[in-house]
Amino acid sequence: MALSFHVCTTLSIALFLYYGIACLFADGMVAEFERFGLARFRRLTGALEISGAVGLGVGYLLPAATLVSAAGLTLLMILGVATRIRVRDSVVDTMPAVILGLVNLYILLYALRVIGA
Image 1 (cartoon, rainbow, N blue to C red):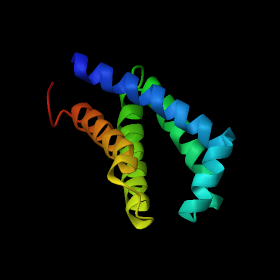
Image 2: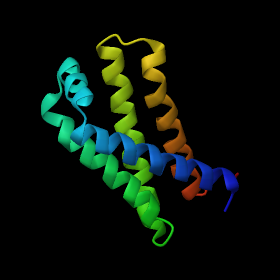
Image 3: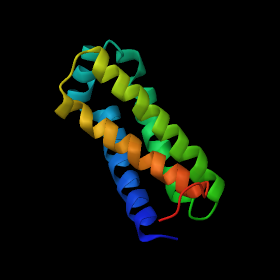
């Protein structure tokens, strides 16, 4: 496997574990989800982020988990970008979701063998 795949996967696992835990336990995330008008989805979002990160890790043993996790995290970030646009956040505030979406799209396409290193 390509080094870029491993770097992207490791980065995604680390960041989604961090953001997922923050979603579940950080007061700042409570305020953010209220600002987005999505307070009722905060815990679900955190759980999906953590599940996606764990799934990417499991994907080293069970490759199908990489496909499902990367696809789910890509979709989650597309929805995150749409939410940031809807609430008129700045480009700077929107970029983490864009970048993580692209990272997970790369992981998905690489795992599907659509693209190489």
